[in-house]
Amino acid sequence: MNKFLTDFKNFAMKGNVLDMAVGVIIGGAFGKIVTSMVNDVIMPTVGLLVGGINFKELKWVIKPEVKDAAGTVITPEATLNYGNFIQTTVDFIIIAFCIFLFIRLIGKLNRKKEEASAPPAPAPEPSAEEKLLTEIRDLLKKQ
Image 1 (cartoon, one colour):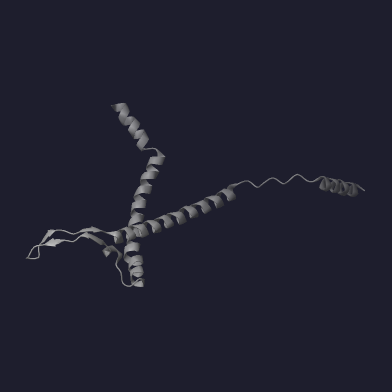
Image 2 (cartoon, rainbow, N blue to C red; image 1 turned 180 degrees about the vertical axis):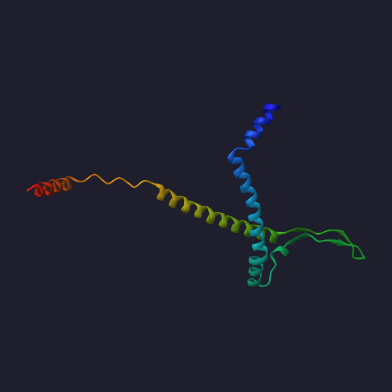
């Protein structure tokens, strides 16, 4: 049992596992920010542009609700909430686009870092003509 716990501790404390945990936590917080931006900024604006539609309320009633004479709901309505699907799809597209931009930015920064730390390329070998001209120059200097 002790070996099992030691192996688990070694696994859980590896750098990749900790990095992944931090990424999941930050990703969850980032998802909430994007969801808020979509729900509170983008979708109301899109709703206004298409005639005041609130996408979350869009649904197809498969079976209407049943009420008794007093107005109490006996059987709730069965609906297909396609507006919520549209909302979630827009959330996904925005999150995917933001992640794409972030990964692209990190890639550019890594390339600049690699270019800055890379040793300069060696000078190309002089051509036969350049060697001959160098010899002529050296002979003229000696005279």
